[in-house]
Image 1 (cartoon, rainbow, N blue to C red):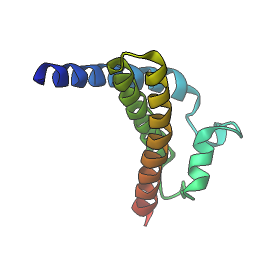
Image 2: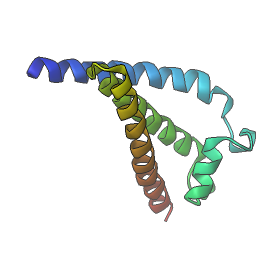
Image 3: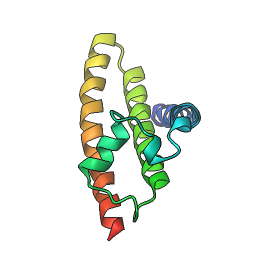
Image 4: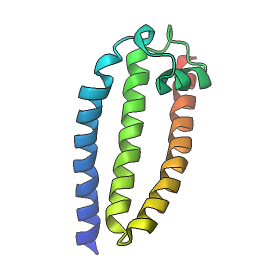
Length: 118
């Protein structure tokens, strides 16, 4: 039992580090400033949804927070998917899990950043 938990924890940490590095180096490379974001960028939607004031909250803080949340979501789904033997069930469970985690974690971090502004 302990071996399974430790293996899953190690998988989570390794996946987290790899995804965070890839996300930070390749995806966030072009997002150095808010004005440089494209109109349809999800980060713009995140900032607009929670009405974050970029004069009070630094853009880099929002970018790092969203990167961290996305990495956690991906890592959890990878660990869950690898522990389910059936590919179809794994895909369905991960799909539902991704939607739930995005809604939950984005809401928590958006409210946290908004509260931090005050």
